[in-house]
Image 1 (tube, rainbow, N blue to C red):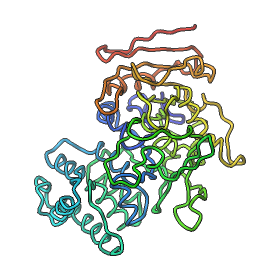
Image 2 (cartoon, rainbow, N blue to C red):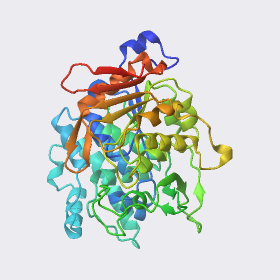
Image 3 (tube, helix red, strand yellow):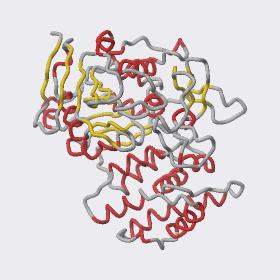
Image 4 (cartoon, rainbow, N blue to C red):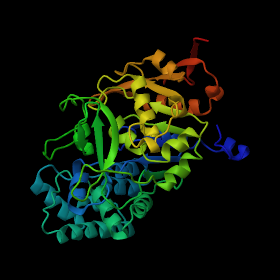
Amino acid sequence: MAASGADPAVAADAPPSLLVFSGGTAFNGVVEELKKVTTRVAHVLPVSDDGGSTAEIVRVLGGPAVGDIRSRCLRLSDESTSEALSVRTLLGHRLPLDPSEAKLEWYQIVEGEHSLWDGVSQPYRETIRAFLVYFHNEILRRSAEMFCFTNGSIGNFFFAGARIFFQSLDAAIFLFSRVSQIPAESLVLPVISTNDRLTLGCELWDGTIIRGQNEISHPSNGRKEVVNKDCNSCSALPSRIKRVFYMSSEGSNLLHEVFPEANRTVLEQLSKVDCIVYAMGSLFTSVCPSLVLRGIGETIASRSIPKVLLLNGSHDRETTGLPASGFVTAITDSLNRTYGDPDKSLKNLPKDYVNALLVPKGGQIPLDIKNLASKEIFHVVTVDSICDGKTGIIFDPHSLIQALTSLISDRRFVESDLLTENVESKLGKPRALQLNK
């Protein structure tokens, strides 16, 4: 399906272009499979993560969170040569959990003496190490703050050094993309282009306000530990989430709501891609933070293209008890900014934002077809799944990308039939069963 305004002859030969709203973890598992079909993908990620080693960087040096962006960049990075693999291994490395061991290994890396540098040529070594050294010097300048290297990501440190040096998040992404040799047509975009710290907040239906992404999705009670997003790993929320929003990170009133602007490049990409994808993952802290910004809902509603929700295979702390239609409602309310300033809210319908669901076979999320149909969402596709030992039911990557590319080329989005498809990875093409004609 060609984007509006595109040359049909060119569009017919070109691979499809997508824009994916996601966080830095769940969608990573299908990036490799997606690259086999198309590299014309704009990956839109939030910059409000305040957990893990990202939290320590933000605490000491300030600025936006770069962990999700770094994670996606690594997944997109080149693996075709031994040097590319060495660079990827270096930037994907995490320091030990023991503080003393972590600090010792960091010094070995920043001084260029660690075995991780093996296989990295001199030009790459000098470029990467320069920004690691710059990051280290910035830490030393903040003598009042003792930096903890525990489980620290070398890629995050490189990213932070580049961002501070250039005073630009976009410049840091460009450098990281070139160093890791990401295809030029693959874009990794922060939904907000900023050099400032951003804090995510949420309001629950009982009126409770929670400050910080980490506190919403997987609170650690102040402990420095590896993040575990399993819904059984932390206490339940006292009430369901009503909305997410951005909060002031400075000044005396830290509960004050702020309204950052959406990245213009994201809006430009939304206006011309062939398909929009809301990826699986943490619904309220990974996907919705990118949707509540002014201009995002307006642009998505204006497009007549596939707008596909990839439903989670299991619940997490944010979505316990939520059916499939509840995911659609959360996305709609975020894009409409329903519970924010009434003068800035939209009144678009769910079908203006979501017109297809891909669902992992055997997943936990109740598939309430009638409620989806009442929202005029008639394309529901069941996709082969696999069982992951840590996260439970997840999409089979090959089947997911096969189903997604089939939807992009499917002209039946103009119809109002209830469509249910079973996509089997062992088959050459998806089989379709049309119901309720």
